[in-house]
Length: 302
View 1 (cartoon, rainbow, N blue to C red):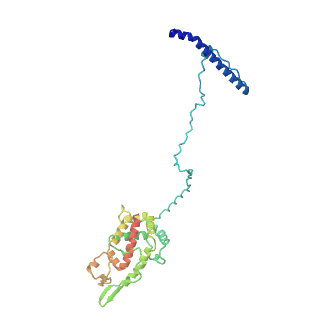
View 2 (cartoon, helix red, strand yellow):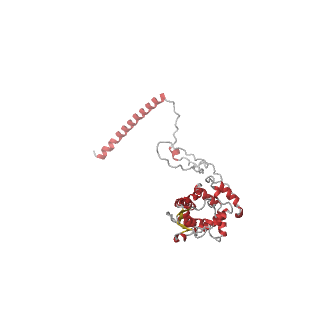
């Protein structure tokens, strides 16, 4: 028997074998269904559609999305700053509410230069001068006197007609040994009240008073023929002139050719009025004056 004949002969036997196997499987499925049905509610019968109906299902309607659901969200979501992972909850910082600062009150208008003495006197007397020393101020034409004196000092001159402070009550002190005359150091003490007067009021307070009356001081300075320069410019020049003078100590011989004492040394007598006055006030008082002028100059330049 050939191989083909053998396979053809065994075909009916194989078919019977597969049919028997399918029958056994069906029996097992039916038995399992019956066991399951005894404990579970009876399911609804399933209607099987014919094969033709399964292949010819009607076309499904196209899906139309809900327009409300697709509306874009317009509310902006703020981005939160990244917080460091420290394990602690962030602490909300509440800004400190500050009350608005009150606006400064406008300064009262200055009087005219010709009518300024009354207000200037009142302003000066309100400062904490050493008791009893405020009377050293000359109280007439005060601002003009200050401007003229400052202008003169910047050139080394002193005019007795434009003094800001009254002259000392004590007479000029002279020491005499035989026929030799010299400057008496005891006379230096009569200038100490003037230095105490200047030192009794803080320099910033003095500068504030000068700045308050600066328009009137500039006006008085313009009357001297300087319309393009402020008074403070000349004041700094006068201070520099005073600070540039050396402090001189020693015995200063005098002579009396007439009613006025002169320095016996020609080079001393040839000095300017300011330089000779600095010798007359004494070296210690000159050092005190220089300290005050140095502070005043620094304050004016701030």
